[in-house]
Length: 148
Image 1 (cartoon, rainbow, N blue to C red):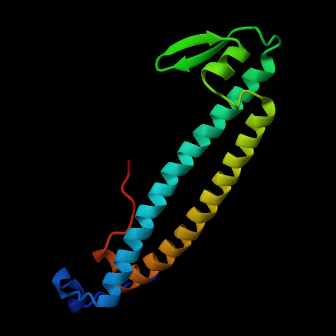
Image 2 (spheres, rainbow, N blue to C red):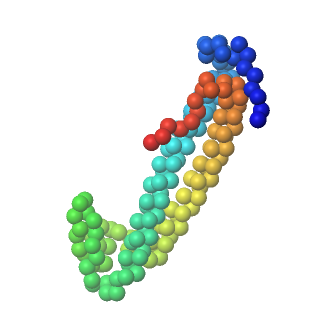
């Protein structure tokens, strides 16, 4: 077991920590990256929800045998039943084909990949800044995310 030597100087108050302009810029950069990362995380959650909705719609359209059969649509909090042609006219809904749904799903998947890549880059930058700031300030600074 390694022994740790603690000097009298290390037990002084936190008020002895001096923050340079460069340190403040690093802290600000970390805060901006963290805010951007949280925003991207929310966007990613929404895109995954959109993808799930598109997959559900695609599955539901595959189950439709007869184009005159009523299809339930959610309007507000109510289900309204229309056949395929009525829905295309009333809602001006060009996505009511498997091909269009597949195109939309591919676009959302690409968006998800781009957001995940950007999240990874931001996390790397944040990790580097976190290492530098903890090296200088130790326990005097908290850069950890709050638990939700």
